[in-house]
Length: 351
Image (cartoon, rainbow, N blue to C red; front, side, top):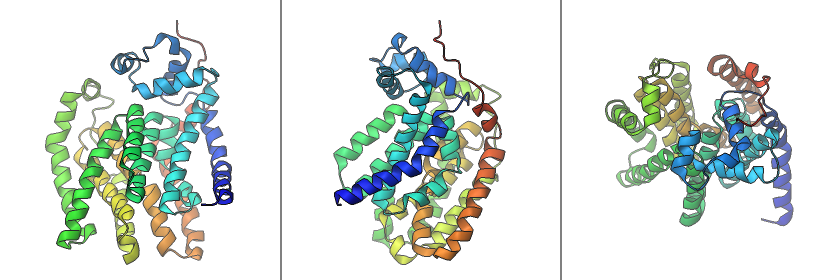
């Protein structure tokens, strides 16, 4: 890659990302935002050497504590705290798009109207960054086979949110499944329907109770009326995931089907569907854990659109998708979000 193309790519990245970074940075009291800012405001009172004590103090993995400490060396600004965190999200999206050779603008088209942007940058920001970093680590391993670099990136993601571990474990399983598909000459798309049934049974009857017993936080959620409710097996998010699976499965051409990255993202979509259904008795797990894997849609949809959808069709389909997904996110998934956006934060240290 020439220096000129590298500089141009970085310039395009900044121009496309900066307005949305500032939108995130200037947010007010969206859910969890005050808690995140309190870590920065009280950083001198927190234990940054012991991850377990830090988690007891804040309910967060220590990676965010180290990040807040680094920011505190220069500023106490909530705008910079959230803006820099946001640009890290966009940076890893951009780096993944470069490896996948898809237009970064297309990735943004599928990312920005979704919960992956609105909920994970304005609310669940640690999980959002952890997923972005871990997916980049895995994509990097697929294309460059740099095990050490990819593992170190995963560790960084895990230090921000422990759900990165789920993504890694099930990504390792993908390699066995993909190899089995090739050896047995079973179509990978069809094989995933078998895995879908197996995973639903495993999640519903084995993993859910195990995770609740393992985690005090999940035990607290399970005993809370607000978080322990069930969700319908057939709901808008399940329907959306099914439609995406069939779209990317049926529209992908032979060349795209041979790409390991495509098959990996397709597998993650099936896994996301299995989690939504398998954990339907525990709404917060069904929603939050499934988004770890359904995040794949912001990459697999651009891959299919790049290879199979004409330029004219894109002009009609993409604006309609942006409008529809924005309504789903802001009216159905988080109708309260924009209202909270305008509420001010408390910028005083806790006494």
